Image (cartoon, rainbow, N blue to C red):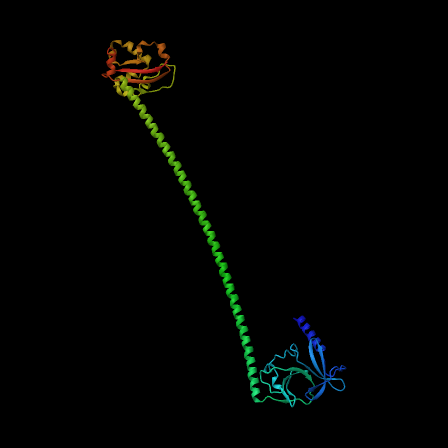
Amino acid sequence: MKYLLSIVSVCSSFLLWSQPKLEDTWKDSKLNETLETPLGFLRKERTTENKIDYVLGIDKNNKIKYIETNTPTFKTEGYSLTTKLFSFKNYTYTRYFDGWGYYLRVNNSWCAYFGKAKPTKDTRPIFFFNYNFGKAEGKPIFDANYEEVLAAQQKAEKEKAEKKAKEKEEKERKNAEYLKEKERLEKEKAEKEKAEKEKKIALQKEIEKRKAEEEAKKKAEEEAKQKYAREVAEYNAKKEAEKKAKEEERKRKSEEFRTGQRVVNTEIAQGTSTSTSTSEALQGGEKLLDETLKAKLKKSLRDYQAYIKKNQKRTESYPLVLVNYKDVMEYSQAELAKITKIASTTVFKKGTKRTEDFKDKGANGVVIIKVEF
C-alpha cells in the first residue's frame, strides 16, 4: 500500500510539474487574440501538456497571469467537468465577479467556472481556471437557504455514511452468518458421512455375521445330513443283517423241514484230542433232554463208548449217539482221536419222527454229531 501511495504521489507531482504555472515566462506569440479575465484582457495563447489543452493569458511582460482548460479528462482534487455544484464540498464559497460570472475556488490554484448565469445545485463547471484574484475576490452568492441546503447535504452525506456503515455491518453480519451456516453444513456433512460410514461398517458386519451364520447353518445341515446318512447306513446295515439272519433262519427252518432235524451250530475250537466234552458239543440241544440223559451225555465220546460197552444190556435207557450219521460204537479210539472240529449237534427227542428211523437203538432219542476229521 505504501508503494502504491508513493507511485500516486509521484504521478501527481509529475502532473503538477508538467502543467503551466502562473508567473512563468511565455515567449511564444502565435495568436493575435485577446482573452477576457476577471480583471481585464490579456494576450491569448494555447498549449498542450500531457494531453491536456490549456488557454493562457499573457501580460505585456510575457508572464502567465491566467490558465484555463475545458479538457474532459482534466481533474483537480478529484473533481471534473461532470461534477455538479453541490457535489463540491466547499460549494458555499461560490463567488460572483461582476461582468465575468460565477466561480468556485477548489484549492489554492484552481477554480471551477459556472458561467454568467446563477448556478443551481445541478450546474456543472464550463471550465477550470487558475488565476490570482489578489484582494479582488468576488462576492458570496449563498444566503440562508443555501446554508440549509448545505446542512441538508451534510445530513444526507452523514446518513449516507451511516447507511454505508450499516450496510457494511449488515454485510459483515451476513458474512459471519454465512460462515457459521457453512461451518454448520460442513459439520452436518461430516457427521452424515461419519454416520453413513458407521452404517456401512455395521451393514458389512451384519453381512459377515449372516454369512457366518449361513455357513454355520450349512455346516450343521451338512453334518446333520452326514449323521442322517450314517444312521441310514447303520439302519440299512442293521436291516440287512436282520434280513440276512432271517434268511439264514428261513434256510435253517427249510433244512429242518426237509430233513426233520433241528440244526444247532456249535463250532468248537480245533483240537486233536477226543476228550472234548459233549456238554460243549450238545450246547443248544440239551434242553430237549431230561436231566438223566443230560448228565450222561456230558461224558467224552470215548468215555461214552466205554460206558455203553459196560452197560450193553441196558442201552435202551440211553439215546443213540451218531457221529456223522454213524454209531459212535462203530468208531475205534484211534479214529475218534482224529476229530479236529465239532461242527454241530442235533438232538431228537424220544418219540419224534427221526427216532423212528432207528427203532432198534433210538427208542429213547437220537443225538447226531457232525464233526471234521
